[in-house]
Length: 426
Image 1 (tube, rainbow, N blue to C red):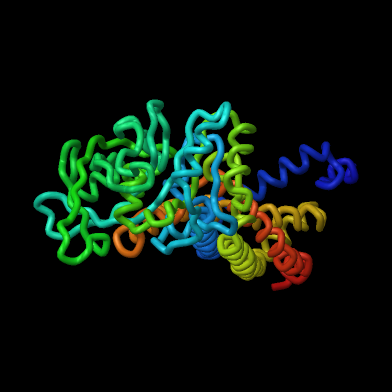
Image 2: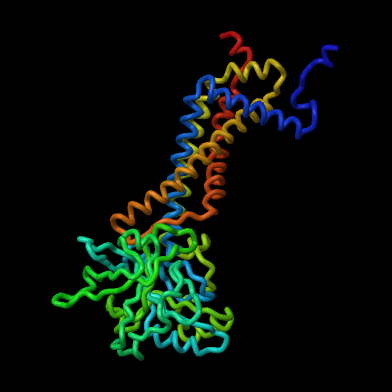
């Protein structure tokens, strides 16, 4: 009879049932520790993991911004031509990187190719603009394009409100009529306190001494695509921005965008720019991190430091928690829980605490990215420097899980040394 009444957690029931029971015991035990008894260790673990994961998310978001180019890279083009070893620094902080030359002429040649609908060089320049009644010019990221009769998306904005063509280019003489048109994003309009039909004056170093400042007119205010509502972007005609920034001498541009059949566009691009990087454009791709040295180094450093710090905190606090909980573990041993089951409860509790901290950290990290973008936009950068991407969520959870697995051996070693006889004798 005594043998029939004995409880053996390792033998009774199916494996799935046993694990469901162990996880249930772990969750209840963790919940009671959090809301009823000694919650300081749990809160400390969750807080440490949350701060570490938040930092990881923010730094990885900055790395994505470096690799992806931010809002200015949001386009519906089919193929993109960029210089080899090109980065996104010019889009992020105004530092000029490698550029393509003779873009106006070569884009015209690409447009004449079969199955190519349109091709446009794209020049990105931070420019100071001043609205009427404003005492201080504000920096906006101007994106120069050559629009056509079709609706295109460049820099997250539609080209519909720009006059087709690029009349100021005038076959390379840059003495044609200026349109003075400007399509503002909502963020740019808010920064400049401008509305459609408002006249804006160009200021800063772009205006030579003893020369009258050129003016532009806001033809439209549009919501930026791809969910980016922070970067102040505006579309202008390419040649007007080239002349304003001094890029007209060599017809410089940061990239060339092509619309049409992908194979035909890539072939035409290779003919005109055999030494440039040619890629199908599909927006911000996390795999771009591996092609950008600075972005990859930044994200890798954040990954290593995140795991090291997170695992250290989890191992320390979980070990302290197990030390405090030795009596509870002794009770579990006394009622028939074998060593493997008790260690499983410790392991599951540690991982659950780590994942709870990761969830909090993801929320804090996303908020941190918006805070960093707001701070950078108000100080040193013309727009967003970090990106929020859905892949950050599973990435952060995976890092937290790995950190928890790295940290588990220490609390398990402490739990394994717990003896029911020693605890009862205390």
